[in-house]
Length: 125
Image (cartoon, rainbow, N blue to C red; front, side, top):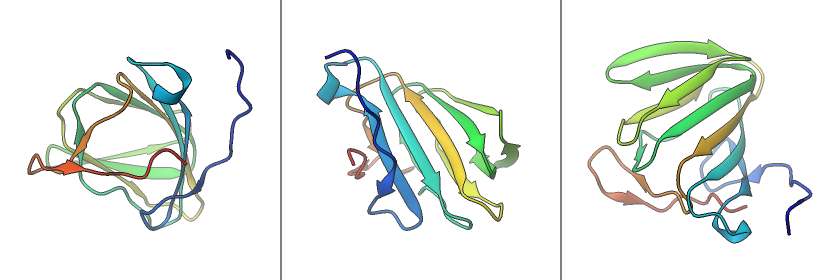
């Protein structure tokens, strides 16, 4: 199938994060994944990295990208560019949900803790 009705993000196992995988391995892709996330005020991803490039588009809200010991503020219409292997964390610092689209250059997407240990994330909802 080439056209899909998209699900709204639903609660993931990570507190404060709603997630939907809009396209990935289950749709026949091997080199691309598309994620939509909504993060509650004060929510954050765990520190992590992927073994593929990632681009995150901020649709709404106010966030911080923690990467390489630095904090970068961003808001709607910002693009976060995260090369493969770069540990990062995204934090919602605004009063409203942080709405993002993530484009990752792999499917499935492997995710790792900063220590290098594989992380099983609940990203298929």
